Image (cartoon, rainbow, N blue to C red; front, top):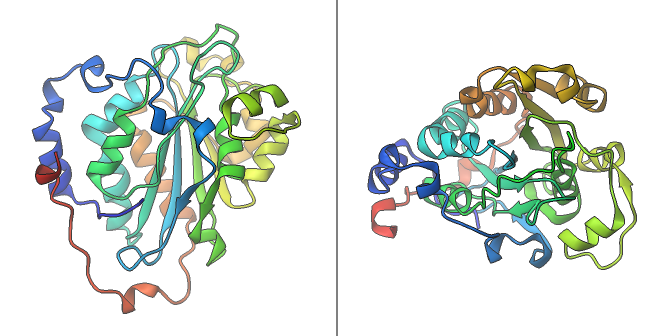
Length: 288
């Protein structure tokens, strides 16, 4: 995966072809159960690889809370904000970003608390995986969500060239409005990954495991008075320090992700791009 190159023109054509400006959230996100291709039980590893087209990839995981009313974030990204994310990175000289979208829920009450896309670069393929996410709208009212499933998947079920070839860490962003469960029980790991044997792990420990190859951040959305309460922020500040970010305006999420990546990515001393031929944008209209 990861083929194609993002362009503003390709995104504009896609948005026009799919008539996103006139569609509701329900008309865009039509899945009523987890897409079989996004079922983590069937996924051993998701790969982010360098190629002739993308010689110096930067791997970015965006894990979106899809419980309750949180569907407004993926909706905004699809309709408006992909250029804020990918376009901003490319304009800043990060020419080979690859983004993996995850859907995150409550692993106690929800049917699909972890949904996994692929690392992609083009507007069409990013849109394809994001709009396949099942907006379950669940959550159990227990003031916790399974954001730590994103850390688990990133740590144990991704393989990224930016780290393995160049020792440049990728980026992992969880996005939501609740605290995180303190542990991932062994039975949950076995139920929602391809692992047959597992041990319970604390959230602190799995975050540290993810930090071995990712810069880990959490964006807490202050989208209403309820989400601004300190009790809704849990112990994220203790877990992540300055990498815990309070976001008053959810429409800035994509741009803030890009800003963080731009500020923290350390490009390699010698870029592989000089020996690479130019790439051609995907013609989205012909692929739809």
